[in-house]
Length: 336
Image 1 (cartoon, rainbow, N blue to C red):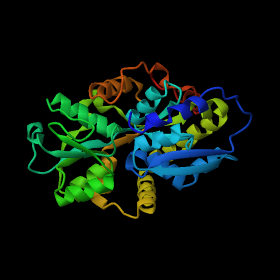
Image 2: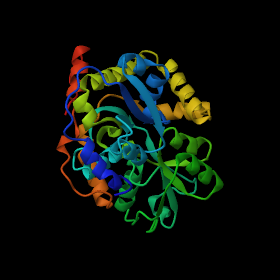
Image 3: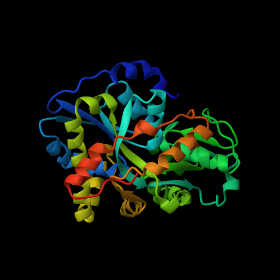
C-alpha cells in the first residue's frame, strides 16, 4: 500500500539475520520533519546535542516533508532511525510483516488540527468540499479520513467521495488555502497555526478533543530493526540525546522555542510570525512517552478507512533501551 509496498523485498533482506556488531555504529542516518511536532530533533540536532551524545558515530540528519516518504527511505535502507507519526510507522511495520522497525520512544503528544474557512462551522457543511492532508496514509491523513467517516462522509484514496481529501505538501496547502482553492486541512504544527494566522481559518477539530485526556501520540522515534539489533549501544546513545534535549527544553522553554524557530527558519527559509509560534507551541506536548495505548486505536482507524489490513502489532515497541536510559536518570519506566 502506498509506495511502501515496492520496497518489501529490500526490507526482508535487511531486517533479519544481522549479527550484533561490537562498539558504536560508524554512522546514524536520522530522519525528521521541519515541523514543531519534531521540535526535539530540530533543537537537539541543530544545537549539536545529538552529535555530541553519539560520540564517534557520525550523525547524518535528513529532513522529510511527511511520514510515508520517510518510511520509504527507511525501508529502502537509506535511514537508520526517524521521528515519524504513528500511522506511517504502522504502515511500514504492517507491510513488512513486523520486520522493518521498532518504536523505541515517543516524542510528541498532540499538535494536529482540522482548520477550515470561517464560513464552515459544522461538519455537515463539509460535503462537496476539498480538504488537504500532508500525504496519503500519513498520521493526519488517517485521522481526517476516519473522522469524516464518523460524520457519515465517504472518501477514497483518489480524492473521490463525499469530501475530497487532497494529500499535498504543507506549504502547498497554505498557498491553496489562502487562494481559496481548498476549504481546509488536517495538519500538524506549525501549519495549523499558519492556516489560522496567515490564512484566516479557524479550528473545526482539535484532535486532542477526540482522545481520552487529550493524549495521543503524534510523533514517535523509530529505529530500523536491523540497526537496533546490530548497534544497541548507538540506539541507547540516540535515546540519551533525546532525553538530554528534552531536559534542556524543560529547563529553558523560552530559549528552546527560539532554537526550534531558528532551526525551522534555516531549513525552510521562512520565519514563523510571533502569533504563529506562540500558538503552535501551546498545541502540543514534548515527551518521551509513546502513549502505547493509543496505537491500537490508530491502527483501527487506518483499517476502517481501508488504508491498512487488521494485523497484530504487539511487537512494534521495544522500549527496553528507553527504560534503561530513564532508570539511569532515576526516572520510572514508561507506563505500558
